[in-house]
Length: 100
Image (cartoon, rainbow, N blue to C red; front, top):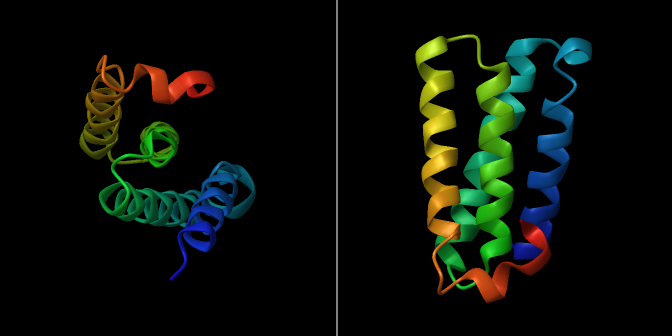
């Protein structure tokens, strides 16, 4: 599928996942997990575009806040931090600009 479509779908799922109280936690976790999966695929396909990595980090952080399983929540948070540290790499700083 087209990257623009996948990115839009990932963004929509991420926003829907934020509505945990309205849609229920299990559905919110499902939406956020799918958003992470989509952005992971886009990051792998287009490693030169840090935007997809930044969106993955955001989705992981949202998922860490809503995940009912504490060990999984910590795992999502740790993944987000590790990815954010990679984004901080000096080779990418000029590309990131307004993302951070």
